[in-house]
Image (cartoon, rainbow, N blue to C red):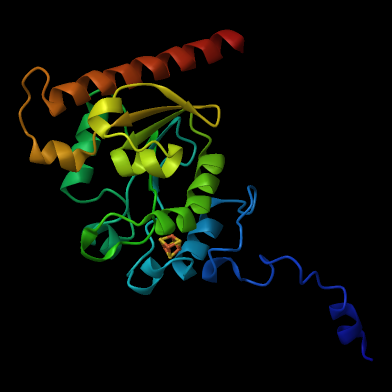
Length: 231
Ligand code: SF4
């Protein structure tokens, strides 16, 4: 037996990550700590077929923004613009989200990282199925671990359901702080809902969003102030 074959006997074939199986089978777990950085994670997402959405995507849409941001925004799944560009929230909804953030001096350059529950576009922009959400969730959990945000904003009912399992309508739970996995989260309206409901009158969705984003700004200021006092 030559030395190369002998050495190959030392390979650890029991580790599915070494066998490159993660992208192809949703039954293979992706344990916390699998990815050292977002680039490695994005490479896997772009080869992934853990669910059928992998068959029709142009690009997997992993995330954009500051990789050390104190706030993470989580949406539902990519639409057409996102599938074409590989970036989340780049259409009209994305522009509105940037405006909402800017209204309280927050930006994706400094303060915010944006990701979705599912990385690949569902055909005809349908809502991802529960199985598709479960298949993709390990990637999102790894993104949350890597970015380590202080605050997570869940845009729309699907994002809330995908993360916390709470199936209540977004109008019932928006604006409320909830604790999930020792992290502070707030469900907020999805920007596309605000585009369909343009009224700014008191009590209208846009007015409610203004209250919510101000509460988020105040909470971030409070957290950062507390961190300064500790150090
Ligand atoms: S949506 Fe997620 S789980 Fe499904 S193929 Fe794309 S990256 Fe993989």
